[in-house]
Length: 134
Image (cartoon, rainbow, N blue to C red; front, side, top):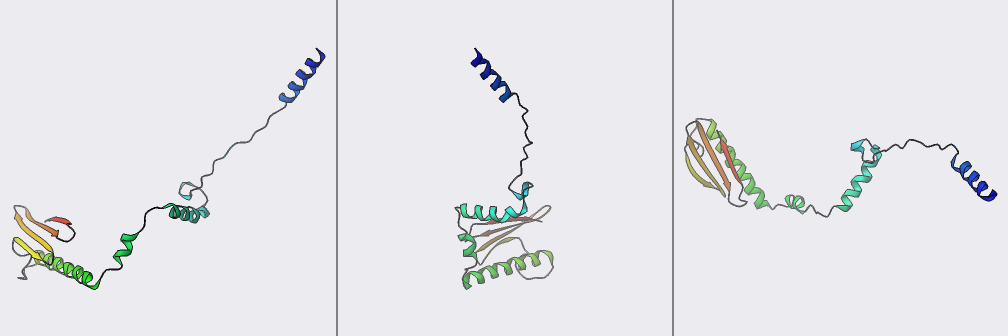
């Protein structure tokens, strides 16, 4: 019986002592959420290392041929002439009369409506379609 009392007394002394604790504070890692700004480069390098996608589309834009650049330049000039023709009174051709035009791979349709004009531009190479309502 004395042995049980000793064990009970030892247990009470062991668990009866004052227990102290500290407050847990969460510090985010990401600097966007209040973390340390020095973690930014590490997070970016880690994300780039895990990125399975390759930027081949971006690199192909810089490797355009001279013929492709010329074609793009011509399209910009044609669209510029179209806009000048819509907003001026000169007789430059495109942009003055309703109708359909095919110039340099662009199909341009100009329609007069009651409130103004509708210009539809279709790029035959890429299939892009733009509609401008004036």
